[in-house]
Image 1: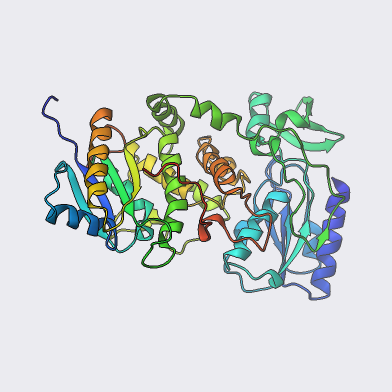
Image 2 (image 1 turned 90 degrees about the horizontal axis):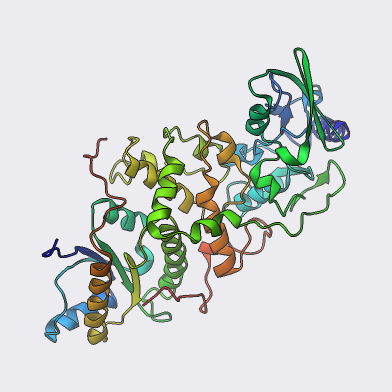
Length: 143
Length: 316
């Protein structure tokens, strides 16, 4: 367990956080390599099923990041997402998923430093909780 | 109770003979006690089979989505709130509905009564003045009505129909000072591990029959997520993860839509308290967005709208 490194899926909005990650890269900012990025067109595009699917595949953490309120490329996608995620996080944690497994942030495409910092926080929190034990589908899927 | 039955029959007869509606959806006596069944009266004569008592717990709103005919329908408080949601979600137009409001004093839980009878077979059940008189071969018992309510009815705060065209009886006084979320708070006081085990225990008997989904008036998707195959979000087995995913997503799909009518729980053949999932969401929707489901035809459903100042303390 000593050399365990968490696997974290990050759903990043194309218009902000993904750009932030890109800028962090070209600025050569260092952040942990535990993050696997999935680019989505808007945080509002993220169906809670995506997050569940990630957990079922055994990821140790899920990080969702979108545009700051008021900055959505589609005007209001992140506002809807915020309502959706508030309830989703509440229900997941109510059912026994550890707080910190699922994390949300707002990061603009100019905030490379914030991206790197948040990535570190996300990884640190997931490391503190430890490997995922719940919600993992261990048998092969059958149709 | 008899007055209600007479009034419902009278309204139904009038609606059908005046050709105001094509069908009246109500209840008729079941073939066994405690089990009234839904009944669709299509002629004035059939209206005389309609019935009402404390065993009319089935949520008739389940028969509404995508109906194209004009419908008269008997609605308790919770049923009418479900209809409000269906109208908001464009599942049925308001002007196709003639709602016969039935102010409700809570529906009786047949499972609780059966447990009380300890295997003795009841032949008739009549209600009088807050008592249920049950008769069977060689026995008769009087039970206190209040003690045998469905769990969601005992904590109901909207017993009167929210929308209706006509009432089958006088409006009842609403229950005040009920603690709706005692069980949710009990879970909230647990650690993550205890919560996980609590829900593991809760859904352990689940056989994935989907009765909870089928009984729910808000579950009307043409293709349910459990039937989707590309991608497949949830496996079709009774593997604990699949069962958990099903219950989680079923509940989440009802976020801001569930009226706590208890249809899911009364339909469950293995007695799982499935409302434990939806009630958390109901509480959160009320706490976070100040919204109670199905009380107004004007307000948009909570996940279909937003406020710039919505709470976001969970965001880093």
